[in-house]
Image (spheres, rainbow, N blue to C red):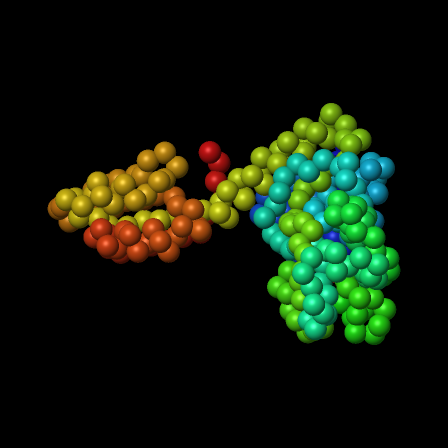
Length: 285
Ligand code: PRP
């Protein structure tokens, strides 16, 4: 049986989370960071450790079948490649930034200016949409330093925490796109390998749903039970079990991790006690 070839970033911001996701979906790989590829022991996949910027072309050529890659890189270099899943980590945005001291009101302020970037296609497309002519300087690293050394008037690069811009005395003035890690698929994927990919996608969805949710257990006095249940959405409806102590029940449910603190406050106000919140490893609906 042929194996599905998965590309992951050899090093950089996506690497650790990509490997953690593979582990969470039960694909166990020897630590092969210094190798070009590694085989999974328990699933028909091979993992290729590649340079980020090379991955879109490998997908186009069918050298690898799928990849965990930043959407920003895909948009820059592989616009025609299908995204099978958004993976929810390594979020960032591709932005235009200018020196803090520069007066900036609109894109018109960039007319005729020099913009340093590693994302020429993305910037060009944006400039075209806005009807602005600017000169691009394509550089592959330390883009943020360009205005300080007189190489450019502005930059376009990825921003995550914003600390690199801050350190270089730059301010973000335009957000071109938002990005996160995605599972991208080669247009040349065979039917046989599609079946392996389907299994992987099912597992990824279970893990991502689990990551978005928390399992909650609490004790409720029976006379407050309905009020408390009304606060809990649950997967279907909460599980309610009698406690050994008369007049009390144990309530189990699943809540969205983003609503977590609000829900806890409401539950306490409605009389819930002994509230436990646990992570969920996988969730199959
Ligand atoms: C990127 C980007 C910025 C930085 C932004 O570099 O080029 O330098 O991250 O992140 P921040 O907003 O959290 O400071 P990265 O560390 O991915 O390495 P690279 O230079 O190889 O692109």
